[in-house]
Image (tube, rainbow, N blue to C red; front, top):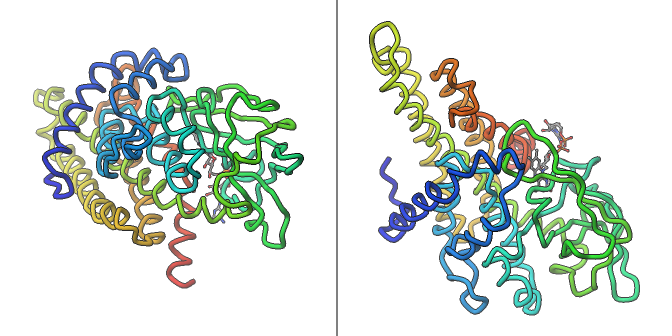
Length: 380
Ligand SMILES: Cc1cc2nc3c(=O)[nH]c(=O)nc-3n(C[C@H](O)[C@H](O)[C@H](O)COP(=O)(O)OP(=O)(O)OC[C@H]3O[C@@H](n4cnc5c(N)ncnc54)[C@H](O)[C@@H]3O)c2cc1C
């Protein structure tokens, strides 16, 4: 599909990163899946190659690249079937919290490590009792003698085993509207009273380390407040636009990758004396999927520059996240079916596309919550 969004420099970047994935990520991916995480050396290598936080400003050692650079990286990881290496969470979802809300000394302290891979990032909002209703979180932080003392726990935290710096949503006051008492704290993993739980076993995204984390009188200095006290909910809402846009970007790229694998397969696999690609049903299946992908891609490509210009896109981005992740799951499921029994075998990448796709309808705000947001924007 011809896309007008990108320039020559982005095509070059895409082919270089694609080569990197084929050479440095894909060969060891099955091993990392068994280990349940991507090794630290890979994060450092990715940092060394310039794949981490490309939008970071040059004064902190970054490339100062525009967001499209990051879009290419996120798309290619998903397209190649390696979305579980959560570079995009680090680059596009958590790092923007530092870019937007950190003060000068916080930026100087943390950004260089985010670029090099020495500081892997995680965002801890969800709690065992509160996922969709984020406004009611209970993990509490009390300011005492110049330190925040944190008690509570978070669950399903991506990069949870590896992360060195957690951006944690905590309750700092109990106003009538619970949303107004939330703040964001920077919690380094070596803070006293901080502990990681086990690496949770999941049905897909096996290379992703997803964990529970615990705060037992965990102490961080007052200077680790990110932005203003009690403004955390508004800060999260502000950044959810980019989070959901990038989930949609990854979803449609992942669906495209699954389709490409399937196109290659149906041209070579034979049944009843001819290639699968010559059966009308299979041709129509693929034609329908390609159409859905292209329509979805056009919608997302319209949103990317508008997001970059700073437009408020709550309605459109909610639509894109829900729509693209539904299309992704449908495409991966239908593609797997066209592989027959081989599609169910772990050694065939299409099985991983299918398994990794499922969670996209759940995290970043479930698709039901996206529909709630859309309905509200419709004035009902
Ligand atoms: C692999 C993985 C990685 C994750 N990574 C992170 C992370 O890095 N950081 C983080 O903070 N969180 C993370 N999450 C958590 C994720 O964002 C939550 O699981 C999600 O927001 C849903 O919350 P919940 O699981 O508590 O479900 P619930 O909120 O209990 O929802 C259960 C069901 O009820 C539906 N529902 C809830 N409220 C409504 C409503 N008002 N109207 C209609 N339906 C509703 C939901 O859509 C869902 O179907 C991750 C989750 C997974 C599975």
